[in-house]
Amino acid sequence: MELMVCDRNTIERGIVVQGTYVVISIHDTNRPRASVKRQDGLRDVLFLAFNDAEPSAGVALSGEVQSMTAAQADQIRNFVRKHEHEVDLIVVHCHSGVSRSPAVAAAISDALHLDSRKFWQLYTPNRYVYHTVADAFERAAARGSHGAE
Image 1 (cartoon, rainbow, N blue to C red):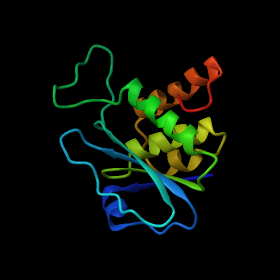
Image 2: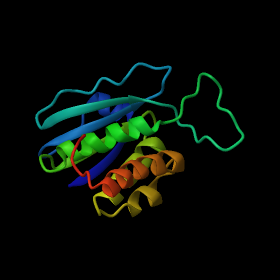
Image 3: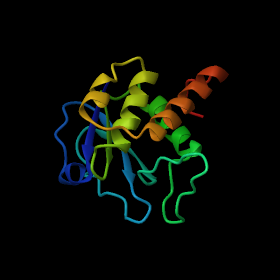
Image 4: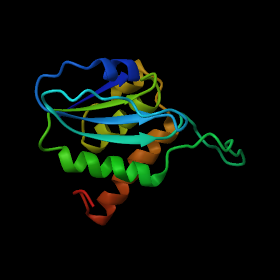
């Protein structure tokens, strides 16, 4: 299993993938979702809307800005667990491919015991998104639930 990060323009142009893959497509809450090209090998797409926000204690986000929720992180976990044994690649994209998607990819990598260092070295992962997704995998592991719920 491998993970790949890209931006919205790349996913909309179409990516070249050898083998089977799924896409986790992240878009801003005030924008339409990306148009993911249906290509050979594509098995499924998970669309999520949240902004590149890192909430902090005592600081409220504006009403237009929505950070990732635990429910969305659970959706990612369930999607990964559903497809992890049937695809070669998980592609994660967001608008710029710099913050949210590398955070999700790093958390998935860690949960699957893969090397996440490249996501931390090449990008600037949103730490809130990373921890929210990592927590979703940890909660499921603590319950002994590795499959999709």
